[in-house]
Length: 348
Figure (cartoon, rainbow, N blue to C red):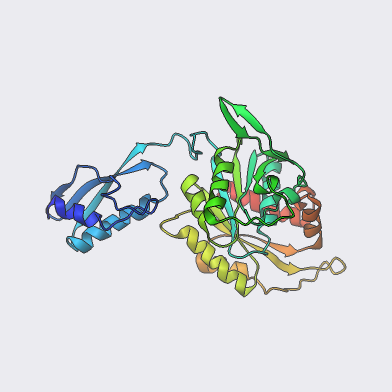
């Protein structure tokens, strides 16, 4: 083996963030060393929190074993143009939060936003400072769920920069595209426009000091999901589903997306919403309208925690419509479930 073979092999490896190969991207350091079947070289990344590090390193190893020698023992050293000084940063380097959690569902209508809103409240009740980003561009619901539909964020000057002051309600600081558009009109944006809007809310938000930053993702997988992975070092993801088979199928894809080597975000667990229905007049009865224990079985299948099972309760829906998440009602059975899920998250 000789160095040019290594260089040629690495031309077959593309950096996912740009689509260019490692040589074209200038990511290969000029320090290739070869000793027998031992190959040593360094790859240069922009930052130490790059989400594609693991996948690029693995692809480099495979490329050399494929195009040079199947028995090559490859050792890749990592170098960074800029090392992060905080766990998660926005574009300007200001810390957002040590814990950034995305709440995701494979399909709409499973209660993802309801889960997000109530978890935010439960975390506040535990004494944490919480920020919430409504990243569901086409169906923003947080302004309604927090009874702040009429509020409009203002611009504030901070250290020479004009930033967007989040709306604070019930101790939760939030931003949503719903604050900036006519709620009665459909938002018809291409993927790039939606992604840029999310980036601006993240980077230009005056979030202040936070312990937790929750992100209410749009359902499915899209440009927005990739934008968030590239701009934030997510510390975890929660996948929401109902017990129904069609919802479980999409939830399975959601877990796979976060566990994909190009994304590589830890899945904190699955929340099974609408797990059963208990009528108020028959409090001891459970009716499994959408199937029984579907989320529980999916969590077991995928070897991820089941964070909780939330029943289909009329008062939860009523509280959300009223803009007062049920987690605010001390002693309510559903509130206690959300509090338990929040405790599990804070311990993970």
